[in-house]
Image (cartoon, rainbow, N blue to C red; front, top):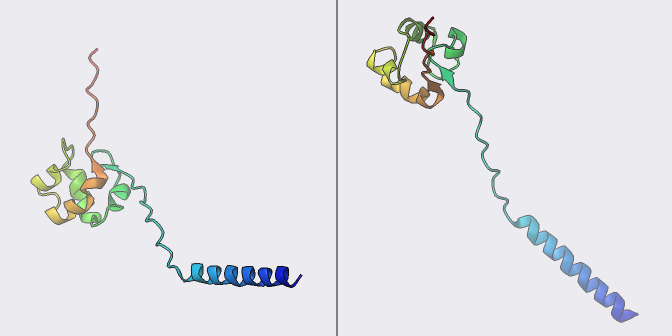
Length: 105
């Protein structure tokens, strides 16, 4: 009986030591979640949608709308609508969709 109790005490002591060691291990940081970013069509977006883009305020929105349509997004820079720095912030969040050609009657 003493051997059984002694064995149990040793097992409990080892288990508590192991759990204390586990608590000391650093946990890895949680994986970063990539936020889903909505893509904005610069040829059809409203002023409110354009203002959601980083660095694009009311004045830039008016310029974007005024110089429509765009064949490519980089025309925002080549047409001097946006400075390069602002374009670099938003280039992955914009597209320039073309209107479908008009149907012939």
